[in-house]
Amino acid sequence: MEKRIVFTGGGTAGHVLPARAIIERLREAAAADVTWIGSRRGMERSMVESWGIGYTWVPSGKLRRYFSLRNVSDLFAVLAGIVASIGVLRRHRPDLLFSKGGYVSVPPVIAAHLLRIAVISHESDLVPGLATRINARFSDRILVAYERTAERLRPLYGERVIVTGNPVRRAIAEGQRERGLQRLGFSGRRPIVLFLGGSQGSSQINRLVRELLPKLRSRCDIVHQRGSHAAAEPDGEDYRSYSFVAEEYPDLLAAADLVVCRAGAGTLWELALTATPAILLPLGTRSSRGDQIDNACYFAERGAAVALIGQEAGERRVMDEIAGLIDDRQRAAVMGRAAAAIASGDPAGDIANLIMSLW
Image 1 (cartoon, rainbow, N blue to C red):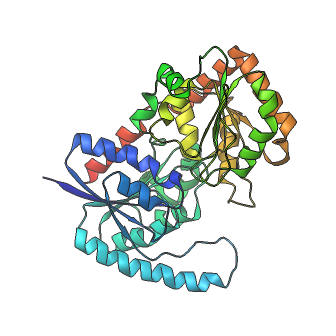
Image 2 (tube, rainbow, N blue to C red; image 1 turned 30 degrees about the vertical axis):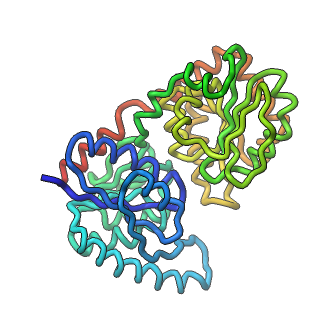
């Protein structure tokens, strides 16, 4: 008998892409009718619809951790979202709702709880975000990536908190270096450094690439994912630029000897799964709640990456770290193995099995 499940979450790719790995496993193991609840203009919509999954939007208000008069209007938006979510859930009658976080997930989670629909919430970051802390109160299971995160939540939620790791699509592990080299047109005789700006691009990383490109070209080949709004440097014999990477990403990652990137939870677990050494430049607290700093420090403490925070990420320091890792292959290999140790197990499969146990 076909089971119905509603996923919710959005705002960034990190709140969406991990769910794809879970959905793939559910469809392999059982007949599953999947629907997604997101926001009206969220970037998650195009991603979800490209997977052939039905998408419904509900009103949602931004969750702020500081005082603002806009919190009042957003409270009404959240209430409207709960009412709308109740209507959506009554129409679809799911057996379970799965939340990947982000402020848009709060109304559907509360609505599912009111309708006595089983709820599972998953937190990818080391330190739970505000949406997860709210959703946890209404969830039957609270899944986290790290034991340290579980230690923060178990005093409140006990055995409902389960450490699963972060789900990653199988395709990431199936990337091939030779295929990546063919896509890039590189020989593979020189080290390859992959700069990842994330789904929305990174002005900091783009600026570093522009500044460092003359020095890098004498030492390595460069792959630069810059985002759709950034101007591209002309491709050359040793430089390739992409606005976004999708289907080619697993092969590019397999071809890379070193990655320079932000410290989003999903990206970190992709690096860990592929044992790829990395230099992490996490978003600061001016533009985020600091979750990437926590993630980056966790990996750096375990020797799984180099974390450069704030003023540490200057041109000279970044170049020194890149040179140190591409020149010392043994150090890079040790770093890759340390990263792989973090991502042991099969999070996507374990989460899919847990979902099916609650159906």
